[in-house]
Image (cartoon, rainbow, N blue to C red; front, side, top):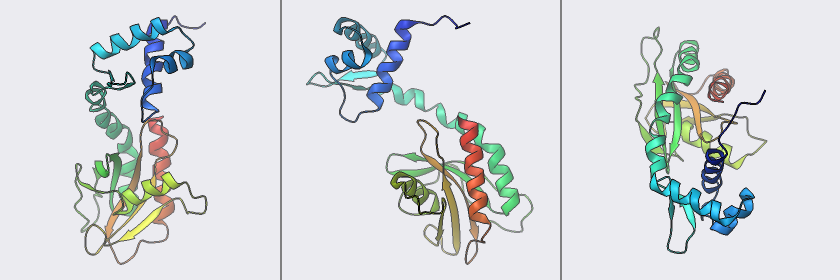
Length: 213
């Protein structure tokens, strides 16, 4: 038996999804066509969403996602962190290196969860909140590689000395998680990444992606 749902709420959420999928916004007519409803309904939906700052309209009348969405998104990181922690703990203990979950934040990579191994004599100090450019370090490079979607790539990225002298990293992108762009990886003090680390990082990235779906 299908649960009773709100048609108006459903349409409002569909408006937000449509706007989130475009960089240039949509007109009332375009939204009306895509939703399959008349313009009057779209005007009412937009007016309601504007009151909550979830939608804004520019001078040309095109609707775009509003800044109110950012306030909602701030609550995403704790939820993502909680879902990722079991896989990160297992990865850190297995490899004996600092494991991390990194998400895209604008043009930067942002570490949102970090787990250090408990049994090693030393490891790289890496803290949640650490930022770096996407094109430096394994975490960011893995994300950029996923954007390019090259089937010939191994599925993980290795780097050495890009963020810290003497440290190398391995990371694999999160795949198939709607609305989240990121990677799972490890960073260690070594001359090179052991052969088994790349595939193990890929396994951890799949575990995190499964937990987030």
